[in-house]
Image (cartoon, rainbow, N blue to C red; front, side):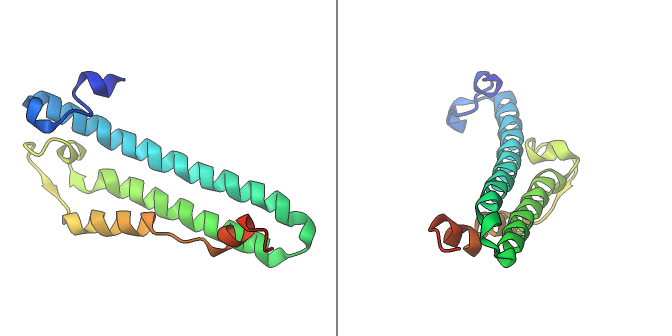
Length: 131
């Protein structure tokens, strides 16, 4: 709700310079919380599937579940770190008028693409009951 009072969700055309900076800051922080919460949700789903697979005697399925959930968690963690580490000082992420420097935007694009395109075959097969 705090972001809305600073213009988050409105078209940039209607915002003054201070509102643009604040809404960008709230957007960046919101992205970090969203990615982090999805990471923990994936671990929770893996733990739930672990309980389902436990009685089947298929150790490979349990191992593969934790490997895929752990890989997703690590990639998501790297994405959150890159989200804030890409500019020095960090405030330059949402205030482009600050002095400093940022990484090439392609680094963030490729990191986010990798984070969003992770495919988990064991999760898909477990959802369909093929374990």
